[in-house]
Structure formats: structure tokens, C-alpha cells
Length: 191
Image (cartoon, rainbow, N blue to C red):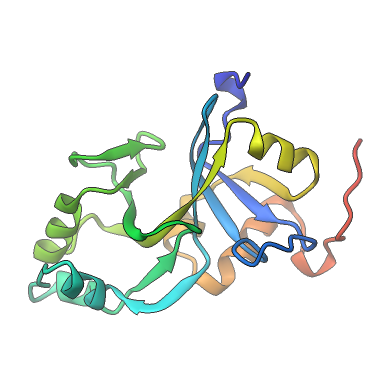
């Protein structure tokens, strides 16, 4: 049973070098929800070849001139292997949308169309990361993977999420732990 104090929400999961699952190898995952039913997160360091302009075109939302138009060049991320046809917007500030999971009082994960429409009209919210798909774990699965040394965890830093280039996010999260990814052993021990 997971106590609230043991929740990994607003934590980064750093895939250990021995991770063989291609969806998660060398990944940095941001945990959005973690409770007795399981966990939900999004991979934040895997930009796809698709740009937001293409995604907006596919869902019939136009990008207005100005800040909204500038969003069009941003990448859409591979958020994880679950529901890869469904979009999610990780954003700051939290805002008031139809379907938002509040991760922190500042950060939310929204899956409703209204946030995309707002982005298309005015280019807000200011800090965003758009994914197709998410990473999910059933009850106890993430805890078991952690016990098998599949992941390292560290408190998330919004600067890594929203201001660090995607190719540098994994190293930046490792730096939060004081570890260089290149020096990380494939086999961790239990203390």
C-alpha cells in the first residue's frame, strides 16, 4: 500500500543503463501521478519528428499569428508506449482546463482539447511539452521495478522540463543527483 508520503509524483525516473525496453532505454520520465492504483508519467526527452503545427492541423486547430504561430515549430514528444494516438500537454501554470491532472499547484497534465485551442489562439500556457502517449504502471509494478534497480529517482526540476533542450534533460536530471550518466554502473547495489 502506497502512503501519500511515498508518492513519486513530481519526480523524475531515470532509466538505468541496463534498461532493455526500447521504449525506456536512456529515458527521462516525469511522474504525474502515483497512488495505490499505479503510476502515470510521460517521457520528456524523446522529441518525435512531428512538429506541433502538424498535430494542430490533424486535429483541425489553426495557429494564430504571433506567439501561437511560433509554437508550431516545437516538437511533439513520444510520451510513452500507452495510447500513442492520444495527446497530452504538460504545462505550467496549472490553469483551468476541462481534463487536467494536477501534478503540483503549478504544473498540470491536460488531455482535453480546450488547452490546444487556447494554445492555437494565444500561444499560452507559457511552458508546455506536448506528447503522444504516456507511460503507465499497474499497482505495485513501479515499486517492483525500483526494487530491481531499473530506475533512479530524483525530485523534478521545472527548469529541466521546460527550459533545458531535450537532448540535455537526462544529463541534467542526473546532475540533480550529482551523478554523471557516463559513469553510471549497469549494476546497482542494495544498501
